Length: 185
Length: 168
Image (tube, rainbow over all chains, first blue to last red; front, side, top):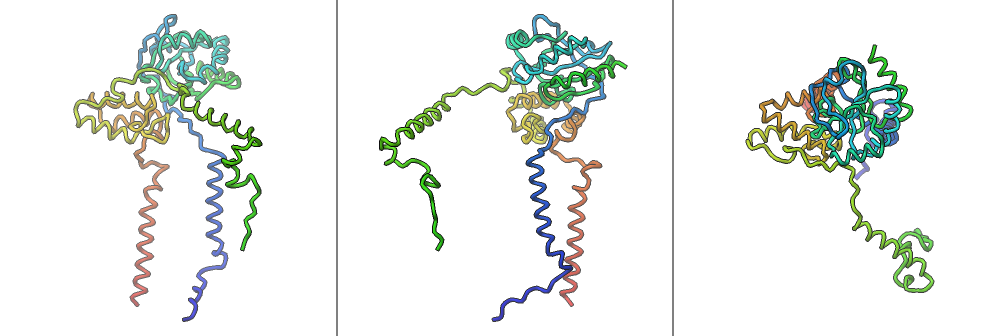
């Protein structure tokens, strides 16, 4: 028997390199995904929408609870946090700086116990004017917040104007102040 | 033949053999081995660090609705809603507290007579399409639906040509 004949060349010679080209492109895609992973932050689609109606009980003994009506009048910061959230303690100095700059900050404490929250506030400071207890994550889900900590700039009409995902670092403070000023215009 | 050259301390010889362990020369190895063993044993007694809240679960997070028809409706929706804490799981699969709260909300709304697709729309309005595992045809996703049909059509045309040629 004779050896099987090579198939006649089909198409131009450069087509020979196509599979290698595809393979290289695939490897490049995998490497790109490895070294520059996709951003996993879930951005709220509720920015630009008015806050939903809510009325939360007080989460701490020395601050009143929080309702939608408490956001009417001037721009404020809504901080979604919890005492069990470690990064929330990291942003405490920045919240204090914002408070010192004249920002009124309302807290939404997600799934938190009073004693634990009190200890957290005693340890890290209490920059909040009001703190609502969001024990069933109703407000958190209602404004499209996917985790703690997150902060929202709310204008004087109760409309969400800006979302900050994650810890507020020292670099974020001027930007948030700008957003608050813009919300006041 | 290819000779395999292996230096001592390489490959399988890396771990001290029992005979060596017994010899006085290897005392330091025994010591580090014991430390490792103690460290490994200590892992069994380590208290897990609490990274989550200690709040009890929401009332309907893990309790099914009494009406099996409504529960089936709620469960079907939960299977296609992404958990935002464990982003590759559905809220039906996830044990994250936020997933529990979402299950509670969904069961409450279904029990109140809301339709699953209305709840999905409500969630998508807050978190975007990302929260839904049920793909919708949008300006961005339409190629995913059109391409398979197009490829099938092209394949059918190619096959038809080939069969007609073969028949000749």
